[in-house]
Image (tube, rainbow, N blue to C red):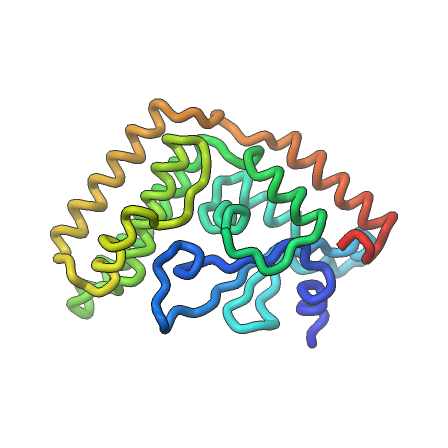
Length: 233
């Protein structure tokens, strides 16, 4: 096991399953996509070589972030990061991991309109380019783009993160199977984009996340790591 993977094995505070299995869109062939958060020991930051901000593995389809990087991304409204905090499929959670989940509302803000919308535009552009080159987009990617746009709209409308496909499940799975035309996909994309814009105007979310609260918690974690060592986890 590499030194980086040791951080995941020994210092993970939260590990969840995301992707289709968490969204209610899995098939028999779906991978188990694991995402997690680890806390590098505070003393490791005193060295010239700092701990990695992220680690792949050791399991297939596993990826973890060091807690500080995770918080930075969550404060920016990164959709994939926010969904880690709200996955119903929790495989590992320490007391510190539970604290991080309890902190989840502090990360939310109207920035979600920009981040969710930007991700959708990027994915749709890639799909359109592939369609022009090969005649067909990757419908699985289109499905996930739609699901994320729906999640973003619901977040802006309600102030809370919902990642389950819910009542959209069958329609999304039809997209995955390629049972919709490209024109239909474009129309739904436009409808969801308009919904995101409408939701922003009346969203209960604050303009900015509670950075101070998150930073105070992170400082607390660093101090406890220095004092308690591995017992923190």
